[in-house]
Length: 337
Image: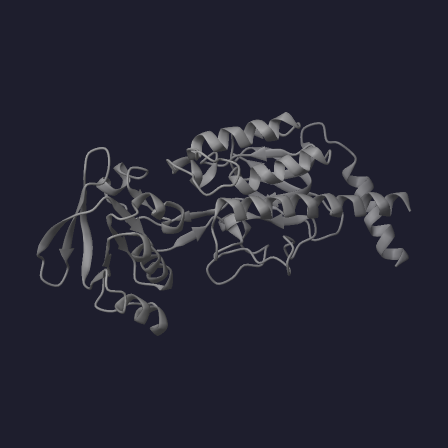
């Protein structure tokens, strides 16, 4: 026990020595969505003087969302970009430094009280006593021009987030897995008709989920069918589908198109250091945000492939900041002892 305390003390004293060229901070937050900004608010209020690097997409996925109706506190709803600006302003009010930049490499310490070393934009070095990762997960899209043009204008990657806006209307969904099946049945409960496009002649979803789809009368299941073009100038007005077995096309009138072909967690730079599942999501311990390394915490969609909601991301951001605060307090206590 004495040896453990001595090692913590030695590491903690070392990190108090500031380099002439490398900035050293208490809390580094990587990513700027609801999880990152909430972590920043809590960390700043705890006097951790957090520094946030926003990443390539400041504000995260919500910046591409035109309407947010399901985040508590906004009775009239709010658009995603405005909400992110307000979260940033709240974080900065308590002293968070929000910096435009991307963490391109990081070397985590494996020691309690150790220093984590990050590289910003491939050139600037920064050192941190604790790190909160909130890099999120990027929704996969089809990549066709008409789809990209109408993102936020009727093309969405989250039926639970945006389905409400299409109540009583005709929509389409692309995907063949459990998530696509679940979202299709969710949409079927609130929309008039759901056309489901499956690229192959079978679904990848579990048998139970397939049964839910096929037994829902207002889901029109189309096998061997792909999106040829999303129709509309400013908003989605229709869909041109192509049967990849026959080559024939068909136009249908819809107001919303939902893409459910998966998400990719933004964790590439952490590979080989942090524990992940087989799809790249960070693994946290129990009901905490602790990763397998001391002083490193994960929050938001980067560690959550089940819910992927702004409000749940914000909740885990709060948890990560509290976990970081307690971790650093433990080090302070060890030094004082």
